[in-house]
Image (cartoon, rainbow, N blue to C red):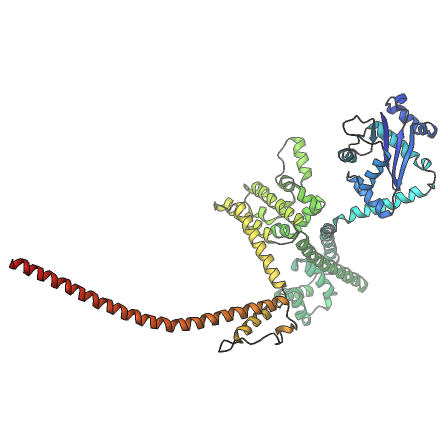
Length: 553
């Protein structure tokens, strides 16, 4: 059976025919030994066809399709032209060797060409890769390396751009920077305290906040110059007049040593740096909150921006977090404790980064594990909604937060929570209502003009039922020319009005006729009543005469 080899390069597709396989006997060792020598390998593999790529973009598209295991139209035409034809019902006398089994299965499904991908084929393709430049005559020495470099750059760039819509990398970097800033600001603030305490040790006991301490150290400078004249400024910084007076009195009776002006200048500069860092930390926190509301609004509204950002950064991305089951999300961040427990056969951890949420802190010690499991379940739902939904809304996160609150009440007070189906239906309904409200707000301001036109058309009808033309009147809200639709509406309104007037007129005439007919009917009724009375009297008279005649006889 003949064996063909399909080799994909950065410059094009190539097809090789492997000869002498019966002599080699499918021995991979023999192929491995013959690969290094071109004279021996040239007898085994021979180039039968080569299809170069048209451009760099074409090469990138072909590379993407091959990596995904998809056969393109160009590759199909190339194989059908250069391989023996496969006839239905007859046994195929050749096979195609490919490097990737995925693309081999796709080729077999579409063209019915039998493909194989094993160690023997890989060794043959290794030899082809090693001596490929010598198989093609017109190819220069550095052309293949340049093509490989350009295709590698474009392929990796396309893979990096895959995550454009969900830029969660910014959240990951921001939360890392926020954590490092917290550590640095704390260590720098402690250094300011130690440094300035040589000069004013009593201030550290009065002011506990690090930012306020750095601000006061910069403002006070030399404690001997601090007097009651600076009380208003001290109260503005501290926000408390009693504390400001206490600082002034402590400065008067301070036990600290005096510092030189150069040392005080350095302390002031360092305190200013600490203040700048803490202010930048606040701005970074605001930036992180806004980014989390854009990227994962439901997760942020459920568990908070900081904990949600930590979960995303620990998982690697929002898509990775969405792929995690709730059991993995529950212990995310407690991997060391988990593997230690598995190794020592102890109790596994109940929570990881989720522990920083306020819900687990509010739960009792007996229910912390249950609460962590339930919260992890809701977090996995919220992360999947944020990852795969097209429009970002906080409705689902708020409803999930209500569910967690109800579960807390259930554990504490025994109040039965709502069912998940009912809550999700309510969330979907509120989300749809929000979307419709947004659409109505974004609608143009032409609709009130149409309403006013309708009102005008009604008011323009005269007392005698004559409809005045409103086409020549200027439109409201700056609309100059009416569309065909508005003209049709006007015509319909005119027709309706004409029909109503015709009905009113007919009702008026019919009313007079009805009165006349009613009078005649009444007369007829009275006449018929008189006739009936006369007939009754005649009948009674006849009866009386008969009775008399009978009595006489």
